[in-house]
Image (cartoon, rainbow, N blue to C red):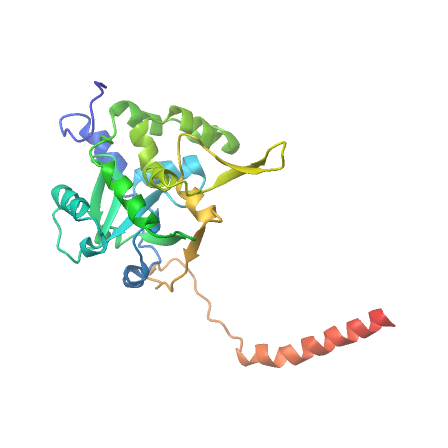
Length: 286
């Protein structure tokens, strides 16, 4: 059993723990319509988070992606069919029946349950698994919840690995080197808890496709030990659910120039473009 101190004990390295989970100075609200996100979500959707903490900044620097967290949306209690699973959830997280629940990893708590409202101020992207059948979504959720209590808070040793000068490592080597150095909790923070739940039902996230000598295609995990948030973003097996966002950015330093064009000009230009295309086609045929 590991003897490393963890961040759940406030007597052990509270400054480092607080530094990792504190927001970046000058962080601004993200462009996201949270109410619209709440309406569009379905159980087993993956939420990518563009977080604002120093931990998020470190993860982005390592993965070279704007997304720093991958969170699994569980739905409301009544949307989870297994009564025993509902009881397990209420043991770990006291909530109202209509509370929208997520599963995510936090340095001070490890893998845990939270309310979706905790992400209200973040910039979010919805990734929806494509082609899931039957009870696949419920199986993914069941496996993810079974990992509660297994993944401990981030240890001091793992926390210090985040502080390594990753910017000096060439980009093409960063994710591979990080995968070798990261412990279990650190891997969970980057999205492996969600990726492993989908792997449990043999659902591919972002696999490598190799052809065998008999011309049969086989899928392999890109990083055998770890998943990154960008894997869900780039996966051909997850659909990106678009939603309108509201611009809450009131930064006075940004100079906004009003658009002086006319939308009707686009309609007027279309006939001219079609005529030009016909003339060019006639010249080629001549």
